[in-house]
Length: 492
Image: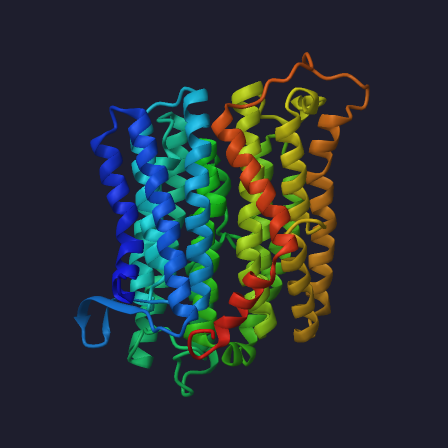
C-alpha cells in the first residue's frame, strides 16, 4: 500500500505524466486518447484512496519545498479540498471521452496540444485542492491560468486570441493586483499563511485594514467571476466546447469559488467574517450579480453565451453562501460546487453535440431540434432542471441548503434573490428543450431524422445526465463530506 504522502504526490503528478505521455505519442490519436482516459481513471482511484484514508482518521500531508521558515509548498487533505478533487477527477475522464467525439467530429486542429494542456490543468487543480497554505494555492492558481490560456486560444483566430487576452489579463491582473498584496499583508500581520479552521488573522487587525483585506481577497480570486471581474468568462467562450466544460465545471471557475471559500473559512474565519461590515456589502454585490447575470443570460441567443452568463450567476450562489458567514452557507456552497459542476457540464456537452451534429449555435435555430437529436435534448432538459434546482436532480439539494442558510443568517433579502434567480433560470433554460421537442408551429427547421453527435460524446452526455439524477437520490455522502469542513480532524 502506498503511504499518505505518496498518494498526495501521485494525485498531483499523475496528470503531468499523462501530459508527457500525450505529447510523446501525439502522432497516434488512439493511443494518445487512451493514455488520457487511463490516467484519468487512475487519478480517480487515487483520490478515492485518499478519501478512504482520510475517512479512516489518517492525517495526510506532505511538504515539497520550504522557501522561508514556515513558508513553502505544502499539501494537506481536508473535506473541502476532497470535494473539489473528487469532482474534478470524476469529470476529467468523462470530459476526455466527450472530447474524443467532439474534436474528431468537428475536425479540430492541434488535438495533441489540447489533451496535454488539459492534463496539466488537472494537475494544477489537484495542487489547489490539497494546498496546505495560501502561498501554495496562489502558485498553482497562477499555473492554472497559464496552462489554460492555450486552450482558450485553441482556434488560433483573431477572435480567439482577443478572448485569450481578456481571459489572461483579468485573471492574472486581479491575482497580482489584489490577491498577492492580500497574501503579503496576511503574512506580515499573522506570521503564517497556513490554512487553519477559524482563521489566522490576529485580533488586533480591525477597521479599515481588515475591510480592505477582505475586499482584496474577494476580488483577487477573479476565477469566482464575481462582478465586475467576470468578463473573462464570456470572453473565453471562443474556445472549443470541451474547453468550456473544463472552464465551467471541472477546473477554472471551481478553482475560483473553492479558493474563495477556503480563504473565508481558513484565513479570515467565519466568526470573524460576521464582524466585518464590508462583508455585508460584498454579500449584496454577490446577490446583485446573481440577478444581473441571469437577466443578461435571458438576452443571449448564442447558446454558449447564455450558458456562460448562467455560470456567472450560479457562481454567485456559491460566493453568496460563503459570505453569509454561517456554517450552513459554507456547507451549501460546497455542495453546490459539485451539483453545479455536473449539471453545467451536461449543458455544455449538449451545446457541443448540437454544434457538431446539427451545426447550430443559436437558440433561435433550435426549434424542433428534439426530433433530430432526442437523446441530446433530453439530456439538456435534465441538466437544466439541475441548474434550476428542481427534482429529480441534485441541484435541488444544494439550492435548498443555500435557502436554509439565508434563514440561519437572517438574510431574507438574499433568500428572495435565490428564489427570483431560480425563476429566471426557468425562463432562460427550460424553453430551449421545450421548443426543441414542441415547436410552436409543429414543424422542425430541418428534417426530423435522427442525427446525433458521435458515440463517445453521447456516452459522456449519458453519464453526466445520470449523475444529475443520482445526486438527487444519493446526496448524503456529499452533504456529510461538506459538513466535515468544520471538523478539527478527519471524519470518522
